[in-house]
Image 1 (cartoon, rainbow, N blue to C red):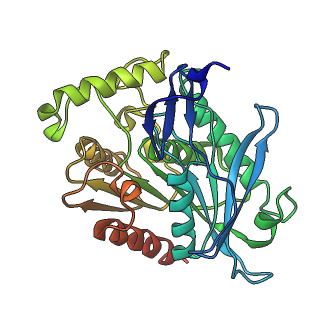
Image 2: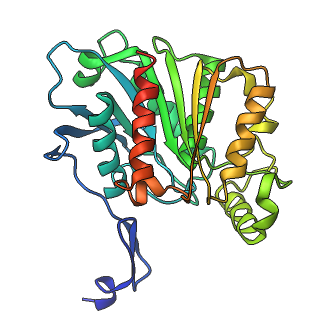
Length: 314
């Protein structure tokens, strides 16, 4: 046996491992009952025709037989090219979020670049959303959603590139409408947006700008550039069509993407969208800090604000 197949070149746990034979293996954990949060999870196929695309469902084990819960649809981050809904990072975070908010959740797995460039992740996510919405009349393929999901209280949530997807799903819903589902709110955690011209303090981060702009072109070879509406919502003529009434945006003080997140909120207000918009800044923190260190003080505060945002709409 070739020993290089087993030898590790780079260990980037809990995200992925690179072996000496150049294989990259994303770390994943099985669905299960989490004893710390008493949240149960299981995996389901939402698109058998697209390589068996799956999602992970979460529900508090204490849910009563006919109890209806707000439905949270989560889109993971990773610049459209790494991470997974089944990674330890997202599995642990969804367990905590579901327990604290007392919701039922669907964490979406989608195909990624470079093999499946943007907008493939968004197309898969819309397919997942349509699959979720197919349960609104209690006759879908998944019993947890049929019995316990309240389709008048659906929330789209994502971090980084997943926040980009959550935003795009809100636009898509505003234009095309998911039958039977009411998107009550959208939560964007340090969203991954860019632009050709710098905003805010982006001029102080030239190297980071260039790297992310290059990464965007790598993950979306067909792009018109960094003012493409897929990555720069301010250039989207449909921005005012965002299909919800409330949006919560989190930015982090030390995050290079902070200025772009703030800019997004300004452009959303200017667009004519007339919903309620909240912006929360986490002082002293960097990008996706709440996933890297979910028990730190600011991550706990952030989680509580998400829970309050969901509960105030109930």
